[in-house]
Image 1 (cartoon, rainbow, N blue to C red):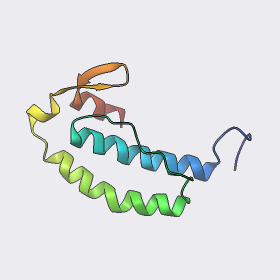
Image 2 (image 1 turned 120 degrees about the horizontal axis):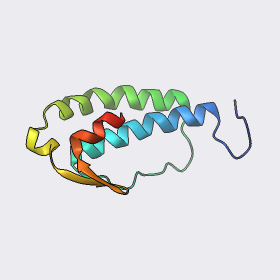
Image 3 (image 1 turned 45 degrees about the vertical axis):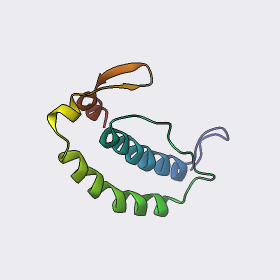
Image 4 (image 1 turned 180 degrees about the vertical axis):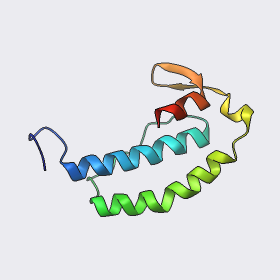
Length: 91
């Protein structure tokens, strides 16, 4: 489904959401927000789901291993500067 030619299709939007979640948690674990890599073409929803399922358990485990000091680190995300732990509420 694609409501208008300038909008993402439902499949493209699903893939975007999956990869943004992965990028966001990778950024929290790394302690900084770098620009996300843009895929050359939107992946199929099944590929996005497979990447999400393969990546998220490890990222969540790494997130659980972060110390209080790491989570308290002030980090800039676009125009905000907050401790990393605050950004987790975005998820």
